[in-house]
Length: 231
Image 1: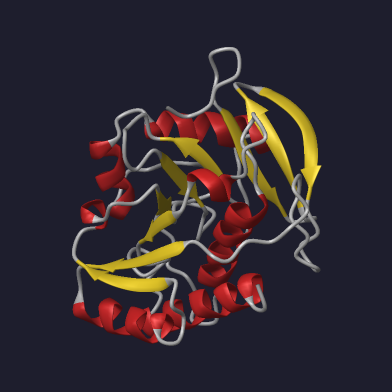
Image 2 (image 1 turned 180 degrees about the vertical axis):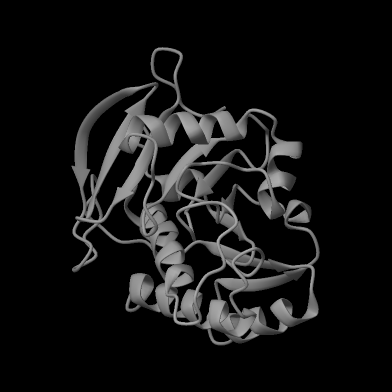
């Protein structure tokens, strides 16, 4: 069962200044710092190897691109099929900055986890006045046994946006997910990496955003190497 505080789940958000802020309901708590340049983990002061990352695709072009991202990275594998077929601790939502989950993979999530959109929107409201910028991420419970958690990492500010050819939003979203896993902690001090060992990831911006699968895969691989290189 996900940890709670006073009947509320504690939610952790990656901040661009290398820290985390916790939100309980609509109350903001103090930051837990993490050095994003040196990779110093927050409350426990050591690094861990990366999670088991499962890159999911229902279309052949994305699956082939994911194969290139997984090559040479033993913690990463590719699943050809629905993301919900994966036995994962957490799934990634590459949604928008306002937490609306009405289309694409997010519609799949809201059908499977009826409370998750409200959890995301409440956390986004508590965290940053209703807008979670691209490049940041937060984790919320799904109220399911597995996956118990959903990590939202926006790839676009507003829903339905066509991303430009030179976008780096897949990279920023992936990096936010990986940093949250590496450095985040739950309200009882348990590192996110101890309760989330396997993360299932869909295409990042490859649906509505129309990012080419090969571009998405290269950017995710670059984010992985930046966060976990030398770990």
